[in-house]
Amino acid sequence: MPETNSSPEPLAGLSEKRREVGGGLFGRQKGKRLREEQQSLMETLLPKLQIENIQSVLSNQSIQYINPETLFALPKKELHLEIGFGGSEHLVHRAIESHDIGFIGIEPFVNGVAKAVSEIARRNIQNIRLHHGDAVDILNCLPSNCLSRVYLLYPDPWPKRRQRKRRFVSLPTLKAMHRVLKPRGQFYFASDIDDYVGWTLGMVKAAGLFDWQAETAKDWQKPYDNWPGTRYEAKAYRECRMPSYLRFTKI
Image (cartoon, rainbow, N blue to C red; front, side, top):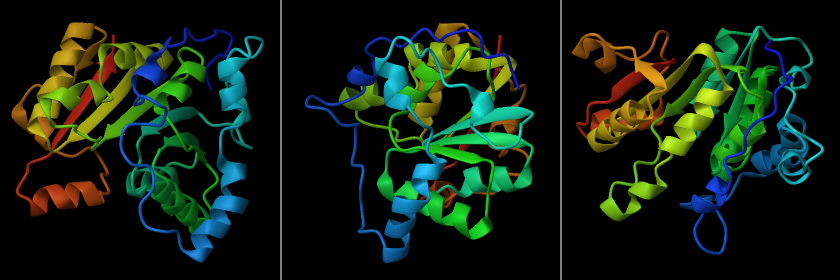
């Protein structure tokens, strides 16, 4: 695991800018009522999986960052982060695939968190930690150079022009991801919305912090290695939209 002796440079005000007036993340955070079993796991297991003291890290100047070494009972050779894991298909697949890697999953939608907690319990997964909330909070609290990968897969596209400021990919968030990624760390972005793909490529180019790892069209049309598929990808294909799979390396 990487050294943790450098404190983050907080994204001052970014969480607030990404929230609507009056508080709360953009978009809905709860859908169908949870099943009794899910509700029980949210009350009993989720507290054990959640990253502790996020609010203390954000508000208390004496606590500078989360120590990745303390997240898991056993040491992990790498730490990966998935922002907005949705139904948790990819997060769970990667965790089962690589027991020696630690995964942090972030999701503001309570039903998605409930699904993840249920899968973690059913499969007895030991290398996932969760944050039910805004990814910006985690980016603010991680030390520099601690992540090997960041995944942002099928994020909310906010397709209307007036909504684009709500998109997660922005110059400040790219800068934040660049800080927490190790040298040559990778940022994975997938979407079936062409405008968001173009937006991301434009933002990455403007930021000048990452190299796009593609030489031919097939490089970004082909899913990542050992890709499990997700419900959002399946929906894209049903609606005749072609997903794009981008991979960037930290400069």
